[in-house]
Amino acid sequence: MAATHASSAHSAEPHRSPLSNPDIAPIPAEQRTWNWWHYCALWIGMSVCITTYTLASGLIDSGMSWVQAMWTIFLGNTIVLVPMLLNAHAGARYGIPFPVFARASFGVLGSNVPALLRALVACGWFGIQTWLGGEAIFQLARLVWPGIATLPNVVPGFVGITTGEAAAFLLFWAINVFFILKGTESIKWLESLAAPFLILVGLALLAWAHERAGGFGAILSQPSRFRTNAEFLAVFFPSLTAMIGYWATLSLNIPDFTRYARSQRDQVVGQALGLPTTMTLFAFIGVAVTSATAIIFPGGGVVWDPVVLLGRVGGPLAVLLSMLALSIATLTTNLAANVVSPANDFSNVAPRVISFRTGGLITAVIGVLMMPWKVLASSQGYIFTWLVGYSALLGPIGGILIADYFVLRRTVLEPGDLYRRGGRYEYAGGFNPAALVAVALGVAPNVPGFLAQANPSAFGGVPEFWRGLYSYAWFLGFALSGAVYLALMRRSRAGAGR
Image 1 (cartoon, rainbow, N blue to C red):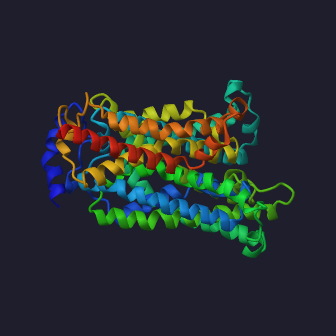
Image 2: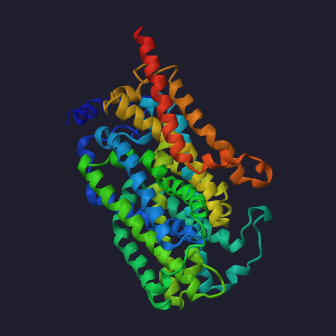
Image 3: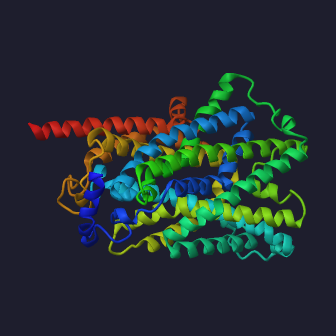
C-alpha cells in the first residue's frame, strides 16, 4: 500500500508538469474502479474478433491440422501472458500509463522511442480492424443493395479497393472516431456490454459448422499437410512467434488499462481468466469452422476469411445477424487494443498539445493511410510478415521494461520523477543511451530475415541463417535486449560508483 500512497502524494505535481496532462497523469487510488470482471470482459471483447479467427484459420490454411493449430495458439498465449502480467504490475501499483512507465528505463524524453514504435503498430492494427469491420458492413449492404458492388470507381487504382468498399470502410471508421471522442469510459461500457453477446455468436457459428459438416468428427479429421516433422517445425516456430506477436502489443501497453485497477489481484485474476481461455475458445471456433469449410464447400479449398464465409452461410437474416456481430466484435477490439495505447503514446510526445482524443484521431488518420487491405491480402502476409515482423520491434522493448522494473528497480519507482526534467530518470538529456543501444541490438539480427520475408524478389539472397533467426524474432529480441540493457546499466552504475 505504501507505493499507492506515494503515487497519490505525487499526483498533484504531475498535473502541473510540462511532461504531463490529465490523460497521462497518475490515476488517484480513489478513481481506480476496474474490478476483475472489467479486465475479463476487456479480454473477451478484444479476443473475440475477426483477426483472432483469421489467426487460427490462417494456420489451417498454412497446412496445420486442428491439433497442431490449437497447440500453437495455446502455447503462444500462455507465453505472452507472462510479460503481460509483469508489465501490468506498474500500472496497477502507480496508476501510470505505458509511455510514462517507459520513462523509467528509456528516460523522460527517450520513452517516446518505444511509445511511437508501439503507436505505429497500433495504427496498423487500427487500420486492419477498421477494414475488416467495413468489409462486414459492405457484405451487409450488398444484401440490401447489390448495386453497391458495381458503383463507378472513383478511388485511385493504386489504392486497390472499390468505391463501395471504400464507403463502408469510411463509415466504420467514423463509428470508431465517435467512441474515440467519447473517451475511455465509453470503451469500458462497450466492452462489458458486448462480451457475453460475442461469445454466444461464436458458439452459434460453431454449431452451424457442426451441423452442416456432419459433426465434429468430420471437421476435425482434416489431416496436416506436412509430411515430415521438419516441414511442420519450419512453419511452427514462426507461427508461434506470430501468436506471441499478436498480443505483444498489449503486453507492452497493458499499464494503460491496469492503471484503473482496484487492486493487483483484480487485474491478475481478470487477465488470467480472460486472455488464455477466450483466445483458446475463439481460436478453436476459427480452426473448427475453417476446417469445416473444406467439407461444406467442396472443391474450393478452405475459406479462412470469416467475412467471406458469413456471406455464404444462409439467408438474409443469418447474414444480417452475422455481419452485425462481426461489426460489434471488431469495434470492441479496435477501441480497446488499438486506440487507448497510441492515443496515450502520441500524447506523451507533447502532453500540453496532444490530448487523448487528439492522439486517437491521429491514430485513426494514420490507420487509413497505411492501406490495411494490402496486409490482409493473404494469410502468409498477415501472419509471417505483419505479426512476426512487428514482434521483432516490440520484443526488445518488452525485455528492457521487465529487466529494468523487476531486476534493477525491484518494482520501486519514484512517480514524481517520471514527470519532471532533472530527476533520476533524466539520464543524458532525457534519453537513456543503454536502452536505445539495447533496442537497436535486439532489432538488428531480425532485419535481414524480415526483408527476405517482406520482399523475396529483392532480398531472395539473404542466407538461411538470418531467415532462421527471424522465425524467433520476439524471443531473440526480448532476451538479447534485456540482457544487453542489464549489462550496460550495471556497468554504468559501477562506473558511477568508482
